[in-house]
Image (cartoon, rainbow, N blue to C red; front, side, top):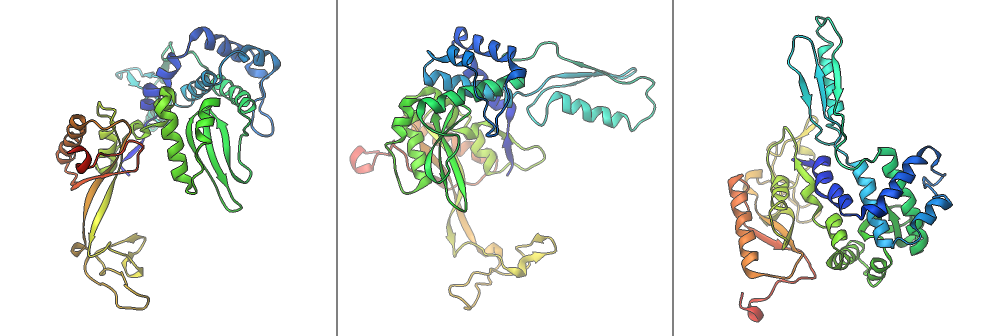
Length: 377
């Protein structure tokens, strides 16, 4: 892939705005109390931080949805914090300023690497002087405070909603980092999906779905919750917009999806670029294509067989073709003018970056596309 999760973009795009949207007269006393008692708050054998009675008293009148917002914003304001901006001063050389760009590219880490490179040249008469910025950007949340506050809120939310921190077997709900998770556990595997912020109302909405298909069930839960909860929508819809181009790689379909998700629009969530309409079929590799430690598709023909022990296709790689479609999902009611404007813009962006696409595929959504017969579109 040519994109990677951008901690700084996610922090500035959702964690910080969600923290700043909280009522400070409610959240400030909780953060202050946690900071004051930070060293006393220990994790138990389940990695929970069980809140003392004094903290429980502080939050007893706070609605669960607001408590979940506090837990979520607190945790990710600490976890995604981009780091400090650092200046390195060396006699006889220009000052070097290293700006925070998100883990693992914090200013501190980049400054450390720079100093290590300087050490290879034993001509410096004095040790480099390192200066960090005096003022921390964003909320005054020590990293240890942010996750402890979130853990205590999570513990209280689990008690209120009657759910656990994990699912031992079968399917069930959990609460972590202020988020409501739906999970499944079998003898051989386990998985979970976040479906919204943890609250009584959101849990009730999710319990209405019991589809056999786990992924589809999670998607329906998330759609219904996010349709009525703007704060869940901020955290759990269109998360691909928090990715950025990976340095040193070529622009590809992942970059296109990331760029499309940054367009100023609320109609679509762009999901991926898929290969479709293969002719005569997808090219298949076999043991003949291994070239040392790599795979060389030009070393032999296609290994596809219509039946076991039957003849192989053996056509070369360039004789296998396909088309490409951008897979999108409607996340708001259909609007014809906006629909056409955004898709046309997507075509223009793909063309400008030499990404060939032949069309669009529409994923299942609670906002269906109108049919030509019914709508004349």
